[in-house]
Image 1 (spheres, rainbow, N blue to C red):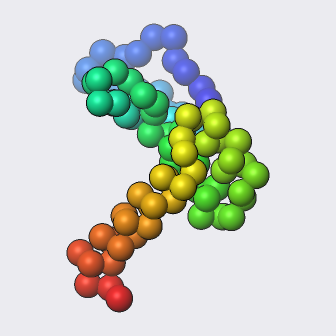
Image 2 (cartoon, rainbow, N blue to C red; image 1 turned 30 degrees about the vertical axis):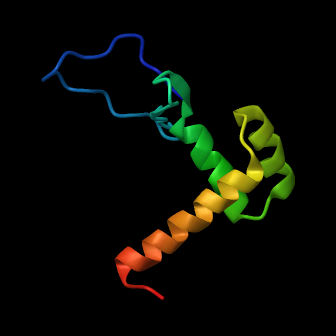
Length: 90
């Protein structure tokens, strides 16, 4: 990941990113107490490994993110069902 030491002002030209530059957005996820619980990129990584069947990695990430794997699996299943319903899929 590449960072810039001086961000341009609005309206100024931005330099083109170098080849291989990766950008990461940190979308905060808040808990019931409205404090940052984690960041979306971490959870997205967890789901990617889950969808790929990389169960050892899923288990390790669940521990790091303080998640109960069965709870996440149930929420994921519900989300997939909802997506099918709203998209008209079967």
